[in-house]
Length: 329
Image (cartoon, rainbow, N blue to C red; front, side, top):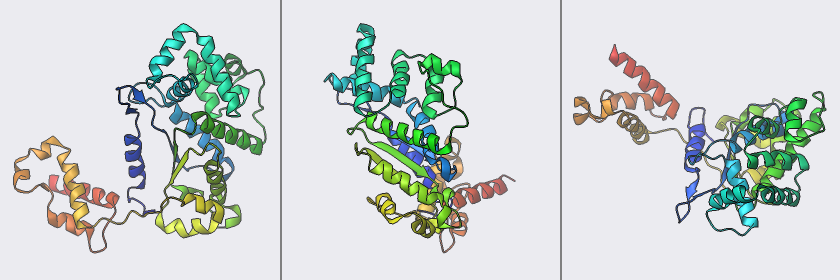
């Protein structure tokens, strides 16, 4: 929880930066978790489709080692089936050169085991082959692909663009949960749902927050048990969310911890301003900085911005920028 500008989205980006692929004891890159960032700017009728789109984008996002999260998921899962050692990518590359068909067969077995459908298996095969990347991205996102693209993936049945909303939403739900099961119990899937207040409505009966609560419950109760769910919401909308999210879903949302980002006081505000100034060599090395680390600002400037009640980081940085512009003049 936190006021607008209190740093909730920034905090999620910092978590994401720390959730990059870690290093195993032997120096080989290893997937520690799958991270999915989802800003809830969508309608209540398409929450699962929105999650599927963002899930696909993050699975295909390149990590510091140059590979995407999906490649890590497949290499790790297939290596564990073969009881391979820690460096699963060395095993993966060797198997790709040795016998690609064996990897495809093993993938089919894994997808069947996690109750995924045949289309998912066909699409993931192209990731192993490292081909049809545009079509793979489109299918995983749930885009309406043209007939030629589906045939390229090996999918020979076609959904109609005017297919019912409920059916498309159910298909997205099935794909998201199947991917969670594919990732497996040993790898947390961290879903960060940012700004869930965007789903609120004046009346609880039509609330997107109620639908969102049901989605969270489905993710939380997925038999694999690997979903870690983080949500952010503006403080002034929290009570309304409590009223519109059903109790069983709310219990799951807050089952670990509930915490608030409080307004900055003088000590914290000075730390932020100092950090921003030190990040710029031209200020850190300037003559004025030797006598006053806050130069070209002053402690009085910061104190005036913070006031008695405190301020948000956004207010602080914006006001400092305005003050800096005045000083330039």
